[in-house]
Image 1 (cartoon, rainbow, N blue to C red):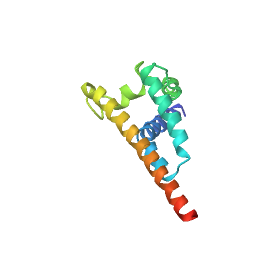
Image 2: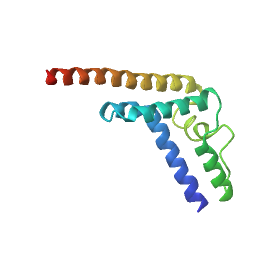
Image 3: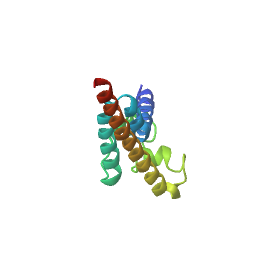
Image 4: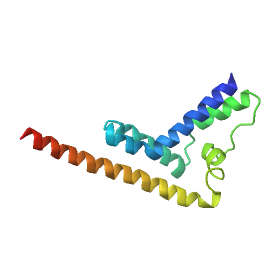
Length: 126
């Protein structure tokens, strides 16, 4: 049971990280999701910038330990599953900058498309 909880938490964590990176693009189509994306980015960046511990990391580590496995290292989820696995540890700063640029680009696209949509609404209303 603990293993299932730990694995489910890890999967949820991967989905959160994916949403953090590409969620702004979803807001191009589903405008209301920009607010959930802003909250996700605020949380994700605060864990990196200020060292807040993510509750998903804590839950997964707790479940793994109670299931007889080793918990996550103190450095957390990203360092355990992503850094050194999906990209070399030496590229961490580059990856963080690229992620920030992808997010900024998605938000810029959101603003651009939102402005064009309003212009189209005014055109059709006239």
